[in-house]
Length: 438
Figure 1 (cartoon, rainbow, N blue to C red):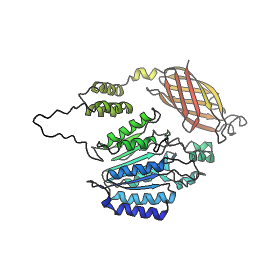
Figure 2 (cartoon, rainbow, N blue to C red):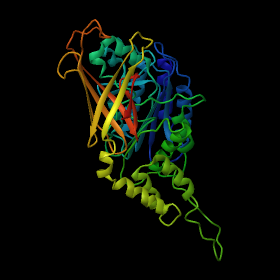
Figure 3 (cartoon, one colour):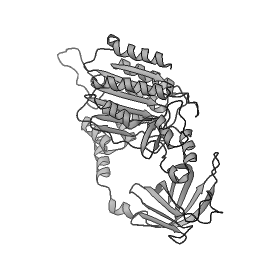
Figure 4 (cartoon, rainbow, N blue to C red):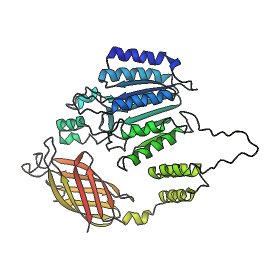
């Protein structure tokens, strides 16, 4: 979008207040969709996502800025206009769809003209922390939505350029954000994971957002339903991350009101009519908060007893039994496939032991070149972060030709279930590990 056109559009949006629906509070939203990248693969859906989200928010009373395929200058100008509008707003929302990446635990939004030769080029990006700071003056509610965890070739390019030692700072997907009070932060998927761009007009997350955002429900319920819909439509492959730091209730479109014509003996409203549909969403989210919400809404309905049982199971797990259920000897095989960017492949086997839920394995003589250790704690649900520490061996046999004794660290995100386990390396999806209990 040309800079002059962008300025004219912003002026029209913020001066023409009469075009927005009449709501009691003042709401502003910035919606950006970046897809036409010049140094990365084109994303077909972000422009459609941005246009459709902006239209839905306008119907919900937002004065909406929608901008697509922005370069760095365009993104800066959009953020400046948004920051000024947020100062007077009761509600401020930022919705981004496109490429993003994390480096050193900091999230960056990627303009369409971005290039990444080294860390200095991160200044060509927009820091999500700055977006949050710009939204803070809004009086009642701030909403940040990042539909932006797609596989990012620019991140892979940066890994190759800065070398193996520093590339550990580049995580897969986005880093988790701890939101301030009065804020909703919604990711298209869990931190450290990637999301699908979608085959239709919209991404799976934006499609779910459009299907729920105009409902006459409390804002927390809306976002939980969005998460449940994404989880179901992606066949459990993508589970959005949601952070709600709110006190009280907030409605974008008002509460759903049920009215009946006056009658001498009005028919009673069935308090359990919506319990079945609500339970489906509750089970999909499967958290203690979701079950408590269902129980509070439908305390005497058919699923109330099951909700109490689920709350009890999540509140008082059998830690004594679960802690040791993976104890024993585990045989592992680690495989790194070669990549199109030229990184070589390799594989090797290891034998580890789990004691009281703690995994440990060694290769070689610990502390000597060519040695490795693997350590991690397996949670009661079977999830584990296993840290690999090693010292490179003979440089002629080392895939990266590092001097002997060079220290390296990698993390594997693993899941154990029964007598099997598997996982992937957090910074390189082509590296995997599989475990079998002996």
